[in-house]
Amino acid sequence: MKTTPAPETDNRPAADPRGASHTHREILQQPRLWTEMVTRLTAERPALDTFLAPLLADPRLRIVLTGAGTSAYAGQVARTALAAATGRTVEALATTDIVADPTACFEERTRPTLLVSFARSGGSPESTAATELADQLLDHCAHLVITCNDRGALAVRHGERANSYVLLTPAEAEDQGFAMTSSLTCMLLAALHALGGDRVRGLDACPAAAAALLSEGLPDQVTALTRVAHQRFVYLGSGALKALAGESALKLLELTGGAVTAIADSSLGFRHGPKAFLDDRTGVVVYLSNDPYTRRYDLDIFHELTEALPAGHVVAVTGRPEGLPEAATWLVPGMADADDAALALPAVLYAQLLALDASLACGVTPDNPFPDGEVNRVVQGVTIHPFTER
Image 1 (cartoon, rainbow, N blue to C red):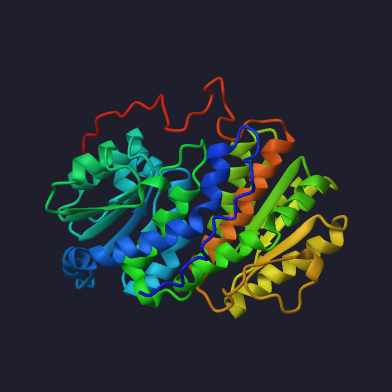
Image 2: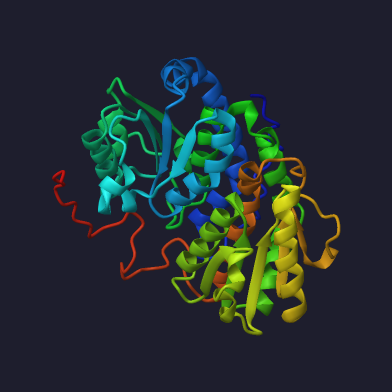
């Protein structure tokens, strides 16, 4: 697949924000890394197709996208687009759900399955445990491991196995900051390209769209919102963009060390109770779908909340600005015809920079928002218990 390259600039200011040298750099480097990711995929395409083609040829194939935390959201964003592109059953199941209740996740023992594992470090205990449980409970399970760390336990375990393929991102995508930014988007891009290719609309435009966002005053837009709504946020979206809303809320919680409260929901689901979260200090970001039908529901909640909250507290992130007030529109340029999974790639930059700005405003150090170790970059404290089939 030909990809429009990002402009030859990393858009960095002269100095990184205090305590955010890793996080700031890792957000801004994404357009360049996406182009590198596509170049890597093009080189690996023959070997990747040799591995995937026999699996995808089976109409009974079940594809399970898995990861924990942000990595789980990667699978949720990609699911619908990959189901349409492959014509196969695609599900997104968190490794934390697989490990806790494996029989509920792998009920059909004889059904051929491709387990796609997303993992920044590959060192989380659930990452390897999920693949082991899949092998234990399924007669025919292949593994596509998408990771940023060639030395991680997951990559090492699957590197030489005949039924596994390890797909590595550029090394720089293994974020050194606390939160997943480059790692999320490079792994998501890799999955969409590897399994969907040209059938996922808009992937080729993502690097240029993200670079344009970073050069067109995006930080100023973000700062304007965090200054009027600095205590609590709501992210809303539908389908793939609901998953993006969940990742956006998680990023804000992580980078502010929990100092700013954030929730996420679907555009329709928000009215069913979670709307009680709103007050006049709340900022709202609504991700608008490119699907004409789904978009109607996103617009309905956007207009409803715009009328209910003070001016400047509600914004729409969209590839299509038609019918929206300019002051409340955060445009993702060049993505008007993209599938929502592709739209999510440049759109997430808004959420990442908002979380970074809110973190700095709270006096938190974004690269390490939990200096006492209450929450860790690679999860700790998990005991994997042996599983016996019942």
